[in-house]
Amino acid sequence: MGERLDVGDRLVTYEDVLATDTRKVPQHILEESRGQFDWSEVSIDKYISRDWHEREKDKLWKRVWQFVCREEHIPEVGDHIVYQIAGMSYLVIRSAPDEIRAYPNACPHRGRQLKDFAGRCTEIRCRFHGIAWDLNGELKQIPAPWEFPHVDGDDFRLHQVSVGTWAGFVFINPDPHAEPLEEFLGELPEHFAKWDMANRYVEAHVSKVLRCNWKIAQEAFMECWHAAATHPQTVPYAAFGVCRVDVYDNFARLITPSEVVGPMMPWDPTTEEMLRATMDIREDEELPLKPEPGETARSFIVRTTREKWREFFGDRIEEWADCELVDNFTYTVFPNMMPWGGVHKLCYRFRPNGDDHRSCIMEVFTLAPFTGERPPPAAEIKLGADDPWSSVPALGIIGNVLDQDTANVEKVQYGLESATKQTVTLAAYQEDGLKWMHERMNQYLEAE
Ligand code: FES
Ligand SMILES: [Fe+2]
Image (cartoon, rainbow, N blue to C red; front, side, top):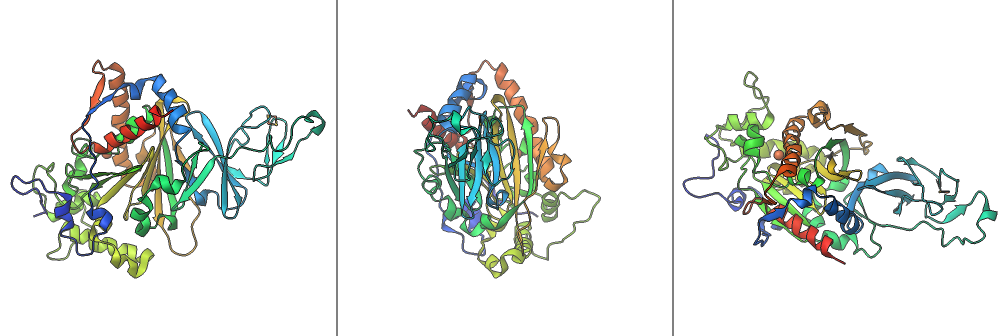
């Protein structure tokens, strides 16, 4: 039999799962950080109104720390990317070996975007009239200087946007009065320290257009009790319905206990059935790896995963608790970045699609450990609204799961556009991450 934990009339908690761990569980995982919410309704205006989108542009995207790229995307001096958010554009450039700068992607002369694409350059030269700046944003050359006797170089330097880095991720904040990124992230880097995201590389990067507001898409990944209806093939091996939801200042997390049977599983699966579901093995195929006698699905996955990751972490992998090798730690860094912790490699990002509030771009990065020299980051594969995630082999079985998720989100947009009920109603606990998100966003949108 499998490892059912919702015995009798008792709903199992994640603490019961952690009590079975064979290693020391990190304190941040042991400690719950439960939100206190005495409300459940969210106005549908947040998803369908243009006015709300305009407020997000002014009060959120121009004022918040946001993930723009990985450091590995701009490894050499002069390497740059163009980051776009809600119709606005920023140039992010490595200006020195240990320095990244960001500027509004707008020429101080008559406003043309300074760079149209990612690339490498030795100067920042506008394509309209050819005025140039050095990588530090100092005015370097005006092709017809006699036309600008009234301009002094200082007025014409590129304005800087705040830049911060954490674990190989590059962030910008257009607000010149922004708190430092370190303060914004709080204890997040401590949670991720052992998981070592800095020493990972972009193994795959896939983006897809979705016909819905960016928050509808993101919120579909911030709870997972939808799995029983949306991803029934995953229910034998993950305890959906008893996920732990922790909220902090600027991040939140959802922990899904894996390889234990939860309350949404209607029958007791065997260990083999759990492993077949985990590995997506067809009925007529043999399990490629078999548990040893007496092993549970959870202890089997812990053992095999620890051995697999020993290649990258050596004996340090002995310090990883079982939970870090098997459970799903899905973090949300406010407002729109979702890095997974532990051995998981996923990181999502959600943005409005250009200036359209009824369309968004969801990106999936897989961040893999490596040995030896850092492999180059994978180029972005861009999927249109009708291209399935499962058309990208690099995503493996995740592609099918993402297709199931994204099949819902545009139907939510259509539903909300036609609704006469003016709110969506959030669940009592499993959707606390969404409540945290909306409270945080309200604080930004209500700020002066
Ligand atoms: S707009 Fe850039 S040089 Fe004129
Ligand atoms: Fe899902």
